[in-house]
Length: 287
Ligand SMILES: C=C(O[C@@H]1C=C(C(=O)O)C=C[C@H]1O)C(=O)O
Image (cartoon, rainbow, N blue to C red; front, side, top):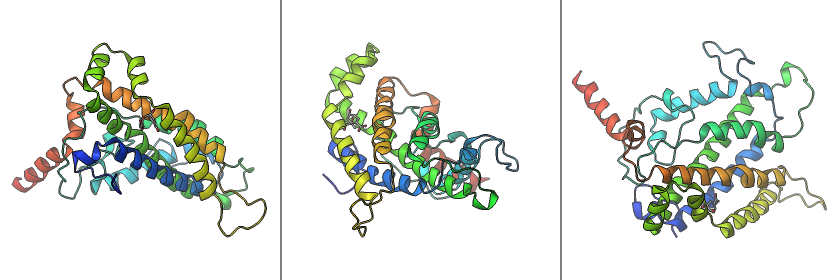
């Protein structure tokens, strides 16, 4: 197992033990971002379209923040990486940096579960993890900016986690190509779900997560008998059990259902973004 997954090397990127290691690392990122987020109350206003007036924008404050952040991150090539998926892919510009040449690791596909992830985050994950909303204490106590900054960090880490399901699926497909080819050809979704599921690994993930949430959420300097925990540990476990693991597996299944078909133009765009960007750069020099 390597220290980090190398997405420029197919042997590293499609090795299931490397992928699992990456998923374990992402648990740390997700828990730390969530600990930051739950310092603030739920602040439902942030998620309601039109609740905060924004010039030339009619969505929610969170969506405004996400679109702006994705634009700047796209300029520095974030969404060229095969493990990064935008929440608003239709709004992102081409990078200003020269394109990187990633090898073709995944079959071209259109799988993007970010809408489902964002909906579950707002409707279920946050309400379970946040402290109860204090009564409206007036404008000077608002922390909408901090709320959205932390939400974007949480959502982007969660998005990477669930979309790593594509690498998991590709590794499993390569290990048992014949079996998966048959299931995919018969559109046997239940059979695919059964074959990609590893209950022992899932149980291990949940046990480790509980320990991590408790450990990272406790100040090591707090020697009291009943130390304060900065995060609701059972909400973290429930987030993985009810949303993160099921969505990772849905990503796996959807990816496999597209594994044998020839790519649609939309799928090619994500996978050959570097080629289109290169073409754009060349054309900008000519014109
Ligand atoms: C990620 C894997 O695939 C599936 C998804 C898991 C997850 O989301 O944590 C765990 C086990 C499998 O059911 C794996 O096999 O490691």
